[in-house]
Image (cartoon, rainbow, N blue to C red):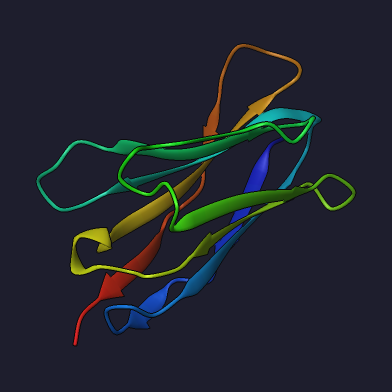
Length: 115
């Protein structure tokens, strides 16, 4: 069974930094991603990384957020720098196992950027 454990959210001031973590278990994961969702808004893609280390980012976070992956731990990280109030959202980890067609969501972690 696929299980995800997310951590790292919190309250930070504008311009501050946070690092989110997502530890996955139960499969080999070919893609691991981050999404975010603000109240009343559609969940949006933020970043993704493949098992080979290739990354993709949404335009809204390019240059500020960096995703990395520790394959030995099946853990991905999202380093968030220069945070803005508009980054406030619940951030979700999503993983795609090698086996099966479904992807899986974490429980989400709240990021609040406010002075």
